[in-house]
Image (tube, rainbow, N blue to C red; front, side):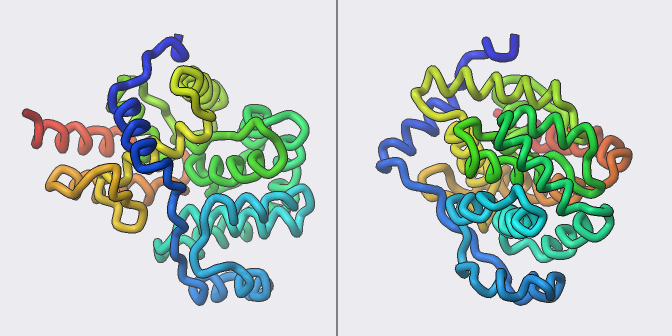
Amino acid sequence: MTSELPVPAALTNTVQRWRDQDEPVQPPIRWSREAWRKYFPSQHAFLDALPDRIDRAEATSHAAHAVTPEGAERAFLAAMIWGYGRVGYGPWRTARVLTKNPHAVDRLAEVAVVAREQGGLAAFRDLASQPLRYLGVAFGTKYLRFVTAAHTSDKAPILDAVVRRWVSTHTGLHLMIDEWRPEVYEKYVALLTSWAAELGLATDTVEELIFRSAVSREGSGQWSESWAGSSSPEQRAQAALLELEQLFDTAEAEQAREARHHLDELERIIRRGWAG
């Protein structure tokens, strides 16, 4: 059973270092206001009101109104701004989701209602039943995370390329996120829930700490944490691989599946290159 996998030593160590530093919150991320204003002219007032740096709490506050189409659009924007940070193609990719899917904001609002009434797993299953084109699991679960955090105690943890690779490295469990697969997400949530119970943390906090530790060790400049690791040749190679992973986060499902084998092989090459 997935939930019976023991807590990896790497996670135990991460939690200890985080606690030794008095449990610092995840720092807010800087974003380019002008880039987002260019793609969302009707949302200038909303974008101008956002702070220069956005954290999880800020994104969650906007998700509180996601059960209406107007609120869902703003909640989605806040989640994507937080998720992409300074990545230059973030505004274009977000606009593509909203413009290439008829009634996209209505669909996002419907999912928010499911999240409020039935919780995170039900919201994932609902979105998986009628997914939005160009919205993959990595960024879709970012939206679900903030919507569930705003409406219920049953938070939907984010499952992106960073967390997926960390889980694969430390447990051997390969979570396929090239498509919306409810059974995969349920395994992931069960795993985090079991670890959270043993560590005395919320499931959402476990995901956050895995992400913060992993991006720091992979050399991500915009997300690195001083307590989680330092730069090395392997970490820089992992950072480059992460950039490639993100390029396929919102690709068509067939393209994502085709890329998966090659990305996994690159990861194995990086590991072997610095093994021992």
